[in-house]
Length: 532
Image (cartoon, rainbow, N blue to C red; front, side):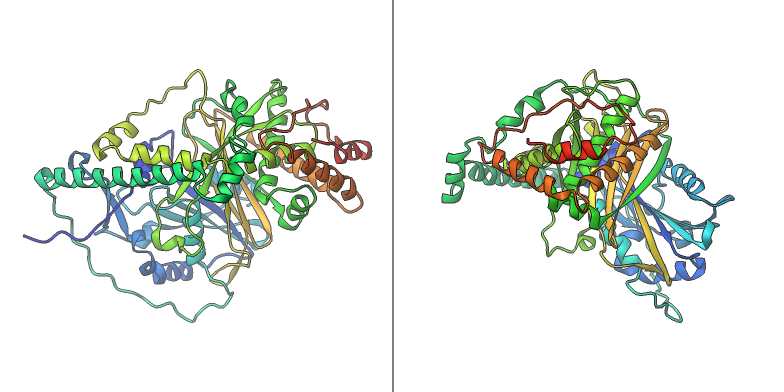
């Protein structure tokens, strides 16, 4: 009897993305990349083909074991053909941004075919200005946003030099996998792997307990100064009833994709003037845009919070993301006030909350909850994820997912064509009608907004509000106006020297939605001198 080929078993997190996916919830990550010239199709195919050996999983398909006795495994595709994955497409005239967004929306609405490796790239020509584009999709079971960005970088080049020819690699014909007997080896494997995950869960639980009890002097000192590590001040926000935003409606599967881009130097100026991180600035932009979008739909934002979940990379700095692939992320839940008065206060409110959550162990607790779920035997996990009902609960668990991935700080090229932009996409579904992804690249922060066509048919308005929020922050932190901002930041730091569980109060916003000149000179001075 032929010996089965070696396979690579999925983790519980990777497998969950396969189990959850359905027509209304396509679970691929993606990126729409624009280049400074048309991409030569044959050369690009040859370039990708020459690098496939670096990522064997690009030639593999998921295999579900009998009775779900174990997690799916990656198996070589005996019918692999790169031309089924690299697909040419011509953009309809006039080939502008609207046409490209419409094409991307149509492609991103479709499920990846599980009968072949779970990735594809559409090579787009016909763009105005003689440009080219790639629409790259990758299933979430294969990679998360971080490893996906590394894969994109791997398949592009760091220089515009194009070799005279690309090496052709021959791959041996993959043999079809021999069906494995589910009993008794399969049952033994389930018991063994479940026991291993239980032991790992117990170890993580002890580690978190030690950290929270403060088993070293520094932790003991921090615990004495701040017993709850700042979490108490946010309890009321997390326990308050979650309200739906206009787009928290059942998703149908059709998608609309819009994008924007911001200058990273300007964002750096904002965070230096007010405090926080680049991700805090990004979340502040999203929060102010969501407040305007809610008002646009006739909803009040007074005393109201938006619940956002931010995926967090768990890889160590020296870990090569593309070598391991898969999903190595946890999730940071955060409640952000929609009624903060002005851009400065919004950014200060975001920064205060993210700092508190980072230091109070919430991320570890969320990861622990995921580990607890992964201790269930694989058949139960498969049953659980496959049978999550597509019902909309009276109270939503969250409003939106926002992800932010660090990309290459230097230009990348596709067979000599320089990449000008890379707009990322994060999957969404159920009653999360909108998702937002950010990707830094070559001095800019690129944002991608994905929305269900029924839940948020006017998602372009949300994109416009994000652009408006960015320009607001630019104005209040621009040259000649930063002194007041620094004064406000200093007063904020003094306020934050109070017990860390004292969250800055929220003041209701008095201006109307969509006011184009909301930050007049008087308003800028007012915002700059706000004290939390």
